[in-house]
Each structure stands twice: as C-alpha cells, then as structure tokens.
Length: 230
Length: 186
Image (cartoon, rainbow over all chains, first blue to last red; front, side):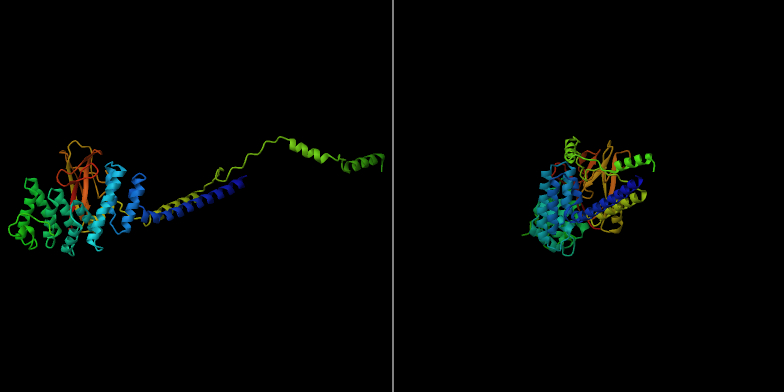
C-alpha cells in the first residue's frame, strides 16, 4: 500500500513537472506575440476596444510610425473615463496625423519629431509647411519648433501667424530661444496684447538682434502682419 | 490389511471419482448467472475527471517553483515598452543630459492628495504624487522629461481633474482639459 502511494506520488510529481514545463513552453511561445503584436499597456482597456487598438498600433508600427503617442492617447482616454468609441476615434485621428507628419518629414525623421509634427498638423500646419520647417532646421531637431508652434496656436495665435513666426526663427535659433519666444508671447497675451501684435513686435525685436532670417515677415518694410509662406 | 482399511480405501476411491453431472448442468448454470441481477458497474471516469493524488517533496516543490520562475522570466524577456519606475526615471535623468527636470506646482489648500498625470506616466493617478510643501497648500514634484511636448493635468483627492492654472495652453478631446508643457534640450 505504501509502495503504491509512493509510486502515485512520483507519478504525480512528474505530472506536475510536465504541466509546468508545458506552461513554460506556452508562455515562451506567447512572449514574441506580446512583444511584436500586443502593447502590454493597452491591457487595461476592455475588449473589444483593446483588440481594435492593438491592431491599430501594430499596423502603425509596421508603417514605421511612432506608437508611443498612440498608446498615451488611449491611456489618457481611459483615465478620463471616455467611452471606448471615443478612445478609438481619438487614437485613429492621431494615427492619421502621424501619417501626414511622417510623410512630410521623410524617413530620416525621429519618432519624437514625427510625433511633434503630428501635434503641429493638429494645430493647423500643413504637410508642406512641416517639410519646409524640417529643411530650415536642417541638422537640428524639429521637436521643440513644432511644439512651440502648437503651443502658440493653443495660446490664441492664428495658425498662419504662428507658423510664419516659427519658420522665421527656424534657421537661426536654438531650442531654448524658441521656448523663450513662446514664453514671451504668452506673457504678452496674458497682459492683454493681441496675439498677432505680440508676434509682430517680438519678431521685430529678434530681427534687430539678428536672430531671424532676413526675409522674416516681421522685419520686412514695417509690415505688421506675419503671413503664411506660399 | 484390515477390514477397517478396506472400508477406508473404498471411501477414498469414491471421493476421487468425479461427480456425475446431468447433461443440462452447464445450461442451467449459465441461465442462473444471466438471471442474477447484479447492478451494472459505473463507467470509469475519464482521466481528466479522475482525482489525482499528488505527493510533493520539498525537492520537487523547489524544482516546480524554479520552473515557474524560469517560465515567467522567459515570458518577460524581450518585451518592449517602458516601465515607469522611479529608479529608471532617476537613471534617465543622470545618464541623459537632454532630460530636463520639470517641476510641477499646484496650490491646493485643503487637498488631501495631489498627483500629476500625463503622457510621461501613462496617465496613472498613482504614479506621480505631489508632496505637500508647507501649510499654505503648496504641492510639488519634479519629473525628468526628455525634449518633447507633454499633455498633463493634476488630480486632486484622487477624483478632481484640474489643468495647470499657470499655463494658458489647454487641450482636450475627452471632456477633461489638459495643460501642455514643451520641453527643450539642455
């Protein structure tokens, strides 16, 4: 009787080991799909939204688009209690903007640049304007320039005025100058200056310091309007 | 040999002889078996429904645990995606010169807790709590951020969402406004 129990015990232990081994193999087999086809952070979302967003993110990744912002947007919607439909719509819209930015900036653009470009597209820049901005910034990152453009628009500066200002500074200024320029404009607006007047006056000031290109809208013939470049 | 022995011998011979059976003996026995109402045996349970008895020794338990740990470790190997822990963020701040330490401030007298949520922490209301600075209701936290544009908001007492009152830049597409901060390189 005792011998039988021992044999059952051995068989049971072996069986447990085999089961664990199978589990390990299954997990190993599942790991690559999580790495390449599933975004773990989307696991917080309920089905079927999770599957739909995973498909969207995976497809974006395969197209060479940065996907971090897509996941962030989904998590933002989740944290704010938005409906699955609203989250999917928001992520899809951002994906479309990333596509435009990616096309405009070319294959050499970094993920953060494409994401910043998508923000600029959302704020009202065109793909052509992004391409030109990238050309003007040459070997510098586009992240802050595009971000400042979006910030200016969000502060009340019309998109065409804001893109003209950012382009005027593009060839000459460092990221820190862009950020200082934005702070100054926001402060001007906060004390009651109209956004367009603030842009015009501040660009003139920078032009006198030699910080803007020669043909900046604010420095031409005393004109006060910053025009969108053709 | 005595008379007694002869009687005994006959008795033994009689016992050795096979009994005489009637010709229908076999038929009757089989009929009797068939008529016997023995209850039908219950079907044997399938192997996956059968109860197992497993005896586990400390050694086998340790082996099983090691296999389990190995399985989990292998399943995690190669996964992508940032894990926003304090340790990794701190390492980023010291090893990446481009990362900027950004300070988030909120004056919220009477608040029991304040946290900041945003693109930098998966919008988790528990990932980045603000510390109470003094008795005036000032709350603050510093977060190292790489160059980029981040959407964020404050969450007061775990439920009340507030944009940053110090910035005029507000965006939203989910019904709760965000603030935006653009971080440049060092």
